[in-house]
Length: 390
Ligand SMILES: Cc1cc2nc3c(=O)[nH]c(=O)nc-3n(C[C@H](O)[C@H](O)[C@H](O)COP(=O)(O)OP(=O)(O)OC[C@H]3O[C@@H](n4cnc5c(N)ncnc54)[C@H](O)[C@@H]3O)c2cc1C
Image 1 (cartoon, rainbow, N blue to C red):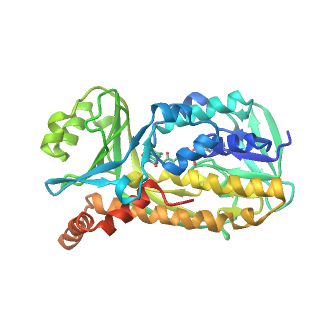
Image 2 (cartoon, protein in one colour):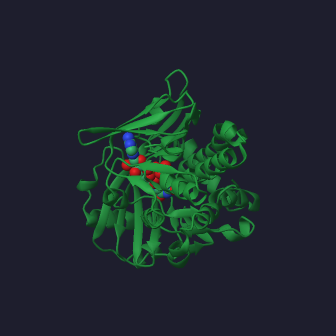
Image 3 (cartoon, rainbow, N blue to C red):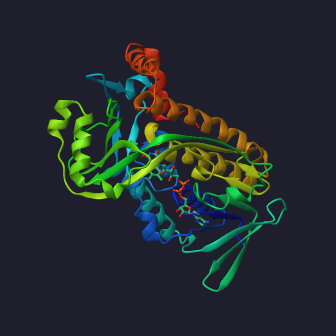
């Protein structure tokens, strides 16, 4: 097979780029290691920046998001016996976020790809990237006993943190920056009415908790847990009891509990790989960077990579202009690092760090005191949370 762009990974990054390029007549194929059912069973992000929502509309995939997604103008932070509200709309100068599950968004992207007859190949094995420094790169994959080859102009590595694309960059070129946090998030999805119409971030001496939602009938809750914990060791009852213990009493009293329909632990990690381009390979999304989910930046950072890459490829194919492709890595990384800073800051401010000095606990408390006493500090939080401009 010969295409202009070969995209590795059928997660949100790969599918969104595939759809946007297809709409502009740029021939591409997506190679996905898993089945579609597997990809659509993953429960992940749920808060979309307004810029991401606009990109979904541009990709002609925004109809259901606009119908079923919820616009959120603010969120709450419970801390030190009080509950303060961050008014995103006011402090960002009129912006907001859309609450719409990554699972639904991915489903919309797959349906859009089907509608246009997009090429998405599932269950590919042993994907390998070749001749990336030449003008004629190609990708091979195994389908049963058969090895297939795809010739292309460009290879996009959108295959997530554990993918193969990043590993194709030589070790002496690739620089990796990483911070692993000494805890994870135990998440529960339940078909219950959310305890609050807006997200509640709770800082508590027992550990962090988050009340989130996917819709008015689907709740997503998280609690900070030690890295050694296993999801299967947490019964639903134990989870609800621990969550209630970390929430303000009036919130805990209103919490509707029910059977979990998904329960998993995600370790918290900050990670950036540089550069995001090597020869004809371009990395995008989790293949190049990971954030702890506290600031809801993971999926949104993937979207900004896709925005830059889409425009760079358009400039190349429509105008013969290479500047976007040449500048992609530096431009994407500049925004990625801002998302890293914000996620690290939110994580540091709201979690309980084992072994913290009393001095550090005081600083954490002061950070929140300062935040809610300063319009400028709230503006800084709000502009990052709704998404910095692309
Ligand atoms: C448990 C969890 C919870 C999260 N919660 C949040 C959240 O609340 N908020 C937030 O903003 N972000 C969250 N994230 C991050 C967010 O989900 C990611 O940033 C987002 O999925 C990135 O999209 P992506 O397409 O770049 O990568 P992925 O979604 O990881 O997609 C990559 C795709 O590539 C495929 N693949 C991997 N290797 C290969 C290969 N060798 N060949 C072919 N295909 C391959 C994978 O199967 C996958 O489908 C969470 C992530 C996880 C893991």
